[in-house]
Length: 69
Image 1 (cartoon, one colour):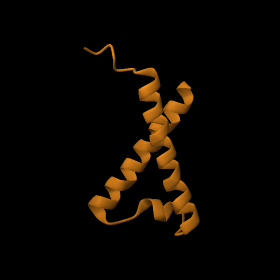
Image 2: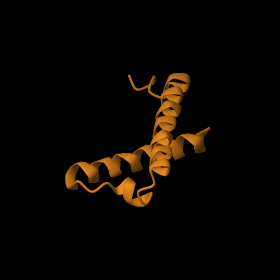
Image 3: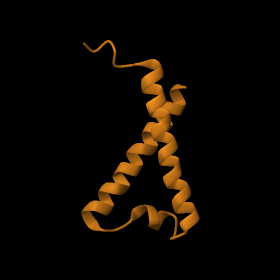
């Protein structure tokens, strides 16, 4: 569970960096890494969705922030 959460967090951070590079420079780093292959591009984007859903489940199921107050 912990390793999966760390991997999903790292994946979302990487996608955020890719998005920031695209927003600031106009260079699509993810398309460059997939060599313009549309199927690979869409597969990597779907992994971002899965990672986000996993983290949402983790936050709901384990409520790691409930002791902050």
